[in-house]
Image 1 (cartoon, each protein chain N blue to C red):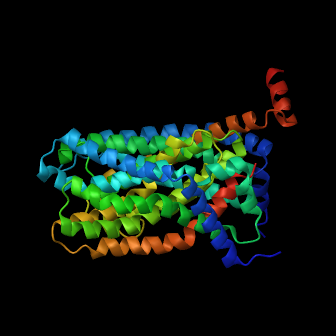
Image 2: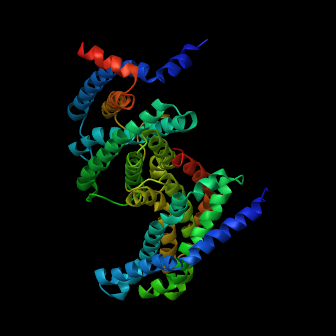
Image 3: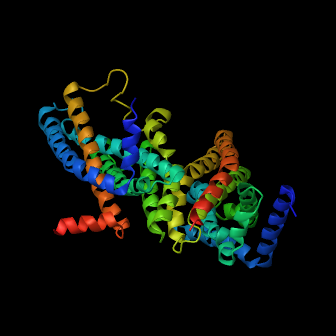
Length: 251
Length: 227
């Protein structure tokens, strides 16, 4: 009945097909990211009311929380791609996993820096070694380890498989980061936005937050597709489809 | 001629220990490194006993971790260079079991000397004598964990050239829980609080690693030596 789904996914595994698909999707994803980002920024910085306790300084939440969410989400996506790459040896999955790592590392870095900037006025310190901050820092190191391991191999595909293996070992850290505020007594705030049940946050603050989360997701897709396209062309540079591309671009 | 698995394990263990014994100067390297690093701390922080006593447990744990990190690289390098690792991969015995024996031999030649001199390090840093027992227990559980996790990562980088710093970057984040629990046990014992809980956590992690790490190490080795 829905055979077109696996057929479509199977076809997307071919580099030239994915290249064309990503080329079409990417501008739309980028436009959507910019538009929703602008709406979310306006909603968060202008429309949302000031917090009764933190005043206007809480507005960094609209950068900090979506970045944190993306740092975990991208690691999970990288883990899924890594698993597919190791089990089924699909070239595209290797590329997706390896190209997701720098994006995820960037979001993790933004999370740590924005959190640090928020912590200084609110907690009185740039940093504290509580469970959530420490596990997020470990996540950054895991990302950097994956990137470093991938680049230390001469054979790209072998390097991608080794780094994919490392990414899978580290995926255990993702639930640790997420549940750290529940499992340990931490300085970091507990979970406010819930998937099931009411969220403990004003609706005027919630919608810019969710919109910014959508914006960062679209940005991830746009960035990933751009990187994967570039990587596919570099990796397959001797093949006919790349040569045909070069000819039609210059024609 | 099919050799039984037990005989193969014994032969591999004997080979590794014999090779290490023939270059027994190398066994002294991690020990000397740990001694020197542990003595650096009084130089850097001043010889005040109260301060050293507070940091002794953590310093010894980190020193042992770094010493083992330096020694991990040699686990597979010699055998890759002369081709015997590929023979191990081709052996009919399960690779995970063979690698477990290899890790055991590496732990005996690297970590056990460190554990033996750990009371000396503890004395140098003024750790109270009753706590030394807890330190040794914590090290007895933490060092095999470090060997097992480190073996997976060394297998991943087996054969790549610039693996030293990269191995540290990959290994240290994964060893953070081990360090936290082991140092936590020593710190608790130092304050007179019950210390068995972190030790139990270490024991549980060790049992899990004993089962899973050789399998992961075998998979990692096959990935790394694929080309």
